[in-house]
Length: 209
Image (tube, rainbow, N blue to C red; front, side, top):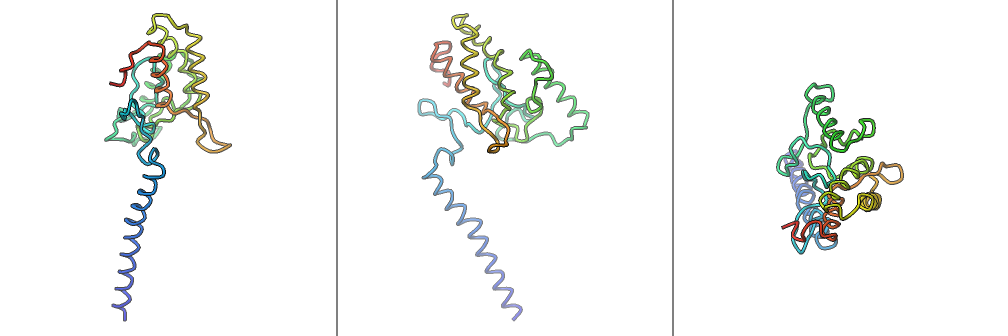
């Protein structure tokens, strides 16, 4: 009797694992693949029919005319995502925060008090696409001046700033309905910057090639 109950329990466990670990994931994957292909494929960035990025993965946007994402402990590696395992009281962590703060403050010419903590602290994944709304706004002046120089002063800084402000405000999202804080997708912002520069003939249409 005991042996029979053990076999029944084992068989039930196998069936549940099969349904929960195989049937359900496969079924949901097939459904989303056909009903929501854009989301199920990782929200790819398509340019001229070619996937050049993902709206869910930040990269090291090193050029001065780009919005900067949050710092990454893994240098934005897609194969080795993650962050430091040390606490905020750890000396190396504090030194890293100070370095990030000084760098951001110098590059964007803003006071320390205006810089959101998220813009100087490593993200948990190392490829976080979300930056605080304030973190996007305080980069606008630096980006506008950079694009102005790249255009050989053919487009004035104020006009570029208006475009960037409108883009940041239009693309902002909330991380939680009603009570959540606003953020921007840094990949979306930078794709908009590239399109702007291409449309104004500041860079060639082959930018992504």
